[in-house]
Image (cartoon, rainbow, N blue to C red; front, top):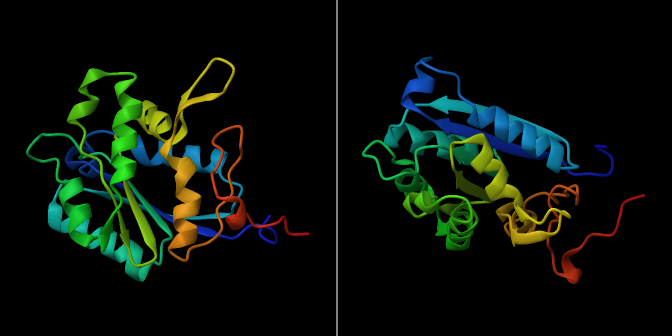
Length: 199
């Protein structure tokens, strides 16, 4: 596989006071890892971080993953609600060079198909250097829904998931060529950006 697909380095960050203290098991990182393994054709190098809801810690972790670990994509889970300790969006915006508001808008649009409280979620996305940083919800079910989108019983996309746009975004900021399994999520690229299959 490595001969035909670029390796992708992905940082997975769960922000939770209680999970980071061992009060309960984090479910966000395992859910993300399982989804990515099933959705991507690329070999993955995963960097995992389980940290408390502390803005300074979140900011330093995101900087480390983007700048030192050279992640192409960083995905956070949790800490995006209206509670006082939910500071992941603030930390993400603080470390970003540019905001990508469409990701948060689409996540809320998807989640509103399921629960009215989706309007309380504050997920954001930014670019830092050559790294795309995405905030995702904390619940495994919501993680899958926002990445894949809403599908009909026949498997046709009704509301596109956010991951359909991730590979082309990573292309545009100078990252590796991410390829997906179309039955999970079909990556969208303009025809001019599609790489011919390698022999």
